[in-house]
Length: 202
Length: 94
Image: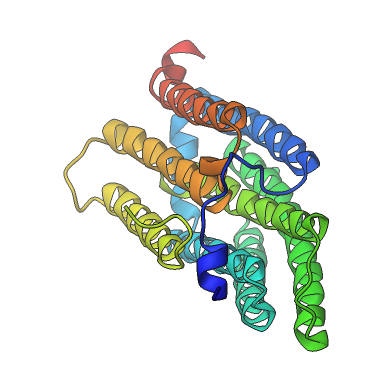
């Protein structure tokens, strides 16, 4: 049977991508960040004018660029996982490289953005908006770095398979890689809300 | 509906996410005549619609055990409602 017919079938029963552990991490992270999201709006409630004045300082175009970069990186990862399931490792490695490229682009924009704001006199101690902005985008940045390390590890593993020509994959190997993909999508997901709260919300 | 295993599906999802992002941007860009309050509610809601797509499609929760999927969907709705409420009523409360 051609690989496409075999692997494009839906699983017969519900299955969990990745190992259980990654979902503990994901759910915990979502809960913690939900509290953070609430805190942003709490501080906004205390001083809405400071919030909207500070938001105007941010460069919305950079925020959008970053959002599009992460959305695209998630697309690349999703496609890569599909290819890995089809044992198309070389294709997957190209897709992963693109995903990593997007992630690095996000990081580069973020760092220059921070530097630009600090140079403009807006720092973590300027006001509550910037405190939340730097702390939350900072914590998100740590997630991004971890995600990039994870994607790089997956890239290396997949490239190794592509080069060795081996088509064999264990469920465990696949599961670990899926878990890595899920973590990357979490990085994307968290940013979607951060972008809305800091760059868009009036 | 697209075959869940097709390559096209993630691309379509991505296009929807990009369109939602642009829509949010337009809402607060002043190009559409909405009050800031309404714009904020839409922006937060759209953000969580995007979050739901990322979870269901990219994280593949659509195929996951019902318990996990339900947990996620419930969180999406509760978080969105709570944040919109916090935005709207926060200044009156604090």
